[in-house]
Image (cartoon, rainbow, N blue to C red; front, side, top):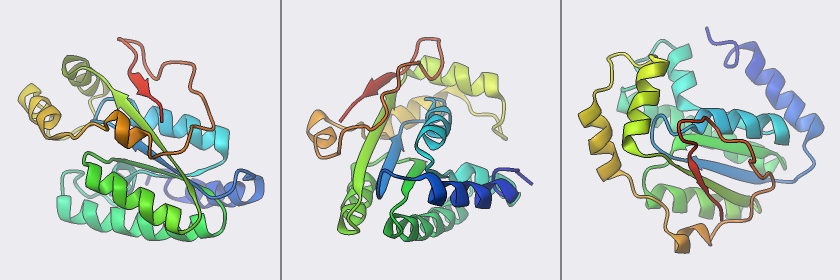
Length: 190
């Protein structure tokens, strides 16, 4: 079982409760597979003493296929339920779901704001050929992702517009180092 999910997850929440001094804050990491979401989310988790929710890690820890959309939806619903409770306690929460559609990002932003939380959006743009190369190098997907799947995803993905980005709070942490270099993703700031 994944260490982050088992013992490390609870200790991470306890650490966040002890060290968090930024108030309730939802951080949404937006991007396609291979864009660097997990790398960025882990860096923010460490710097902000936040609680990070990654459905891929939970699915893997439960030995569930990461492409099982029904189970993914249930895990994301559970993560959001826990996330709202943590926001209500004044903690920072990172959602690392990809959030491919504006309606999903709007729902998260509005519901977090209703709880009195600030809400940040990090959008990571990486060209599709670079995404495909990163996915192939990490080699964790089973079955293997084909290049035509990445092309389909880029067509389905609703990238945040400047108008949407303006609806979010400014980032507390400026990410100065690139997530990966080949080339680094473009960080669109709110």
